[in-house]
Image (cartoon, rainbow, N blue to C red; front, side):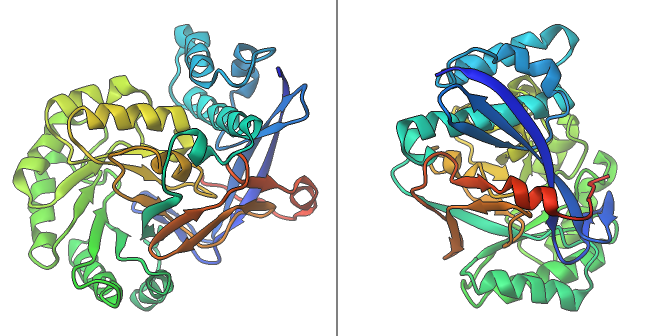
Length: 359
């Protein structure tokens, strides 16, 4: 079987509420979901989710190749764009195509991707994370009550500008989840809003009121000394990595012992997550994938020994997508459909009205 072509399309996710973080809010709660469909001469189609704006530039590295050689093709894509840079849109495109390649590989084997990757258990522990920065306190509680009904014992709250407000909201979410656990896991995400000169002081103010499992992206993603200062100055673990593109960007953070939880963005693909997981495992650190539509990295998370918990952001799926998975018992129970188990209804997507943006 050989790769013959691709199709790109875009659907939307309708959150039904404002979504965002300290860096900005999408008031109408409608965001775009780019999709790339990788075609073969054997009739199978691979599904990849995520920005693929550079697909015209990257696809020649795959054309005519056997899709089963996923990791070799991943490196081939990186090499193909090396001279002009693999970060940003290029790395996102490589991630989306890599996801489609893994989908094809498992489909060719006639099994779900979690089995292809060697997982023994289809259940993936998770935590709730609603991008709820714009919600008032009552709406925040209502949102996480729905997650508590699904058995979740951990949740993440966005903040960064007003730590007194943040602490109050963290306590409220913790109390919601106490229906399932005496000591729920509570994570605090400030999305790089602080400088190193203020991060420890502000984090400690929050820790006076709530026991944090981790604080996420307390400083800029590249600030090794800042991450290290926070790690040394607070009780909770420091989590970061979702915006890092390539193992070389993790190296200095890990060498400085600046992270307690290593994260990887779902939009950067499955091979990237697997490699980040091995890098973290070599330092006895847990790994946690950051969420994306239809939770494609859950298959890979099920297969790595140092997986801690996968972020889940919504109980609904984007328009025109279905996925063979169940969100229950505090995580994701993956099904037996071949590949990622994600189906794309192109006719439904074509008939939709309206568009969304993360801009």
